[in-house]
Image (tube, rainbow, N blue to C red):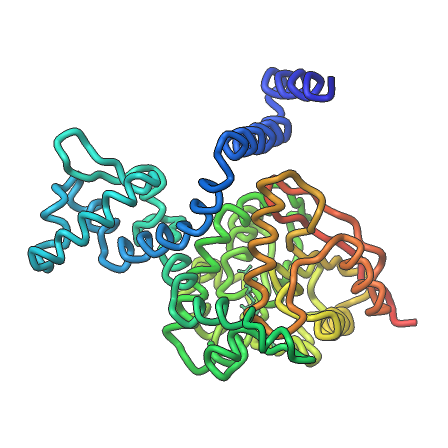
Length: 390
Ligand SMILES: C[S@@+](CC[C@H](N)C(=O)[O-])C[C@H]1O[C@@H](n2cnc3c(N)ncnc32)[C@H](O)[C@@H]1O
């Protein structure tokens, strides 16, 4: 009965052109198909599929690293033995063919009837010049340091320690955000990854989170400014302020997506563990996307308190994060995958439930109880108002 009502509601959504209902229907249908596909697979097949996920990720890595997606975008369909622009030996070319065949089985490429390979819509997202390219995300996530961090963090000796180390510290000797300061090319790759993986999320945020047209919009920990740039594009009379660490802000000034909006943007170096620049008092709304999940409770409260103390009372603060345990199968899996990733960051970094966010907000003593802002995304807004100190 519930399902029938749901289907009726969706049909009504399509008729009434409600984008929200169409979105809900797509998510629901996807979950249904995933459940059906998994239910029809024998358990041994499912376990093997999960284990082989590693081989598929590595194949994607090699196809990106060898430039195959870019090559196909330039050359169009290409015979398998000719991949590599003539740089591979005969044996090397045969390796590339095997990657291409496996990648085609997963829908990254299409194997044409004449044996050549072409890009699919999925594979296009791995071409460097694609506006929403996930190439940097692939290279970052499948980087040896990242991979090593994910593997080392779960070692029994680490879990037996009273204070387990973060994965990144174990793999490199430094915490993640200290390491990015020492390795510019890794920092570039991280920011490219954030930008790529953010593209769809930023679209949903700008579409579903409404602001006053003349607002001063501040993004704390905004990276190189891709979310802020999307808002400034949408609101031509708004002003923007980007707060992030020195290197990030300098990079944003030189090459980031905010450059076309430089006249309406302040670029402000910040350490959010210390009071922000007085410019924070000009903010009408403060965005913090994917910041709080990088930290344990104590650090998260410190950051939120600093931000609140630097802003005017009455300013809106909104986090964009995933909220655990509120959605269906596929979204929850994505969130738990993100939560797994958080283990490479300093201990305590994690995805949270709405109640856990509420506790953090309350502990600052400066924020109203939050409300959830729904987005057509796996992420949500968690919004509160900054109050005067008691
Ligand atoms: C996960 S990224 C999120 C970036 C961006 N908000 C986005 O949505 O893509 C975390 C950001 O926090 C910034 N950050 C880390 N530690 C910081 C600190 N102590 N002060 C200011 N920014 C910091 C990083 O430089 C990075 O841009």
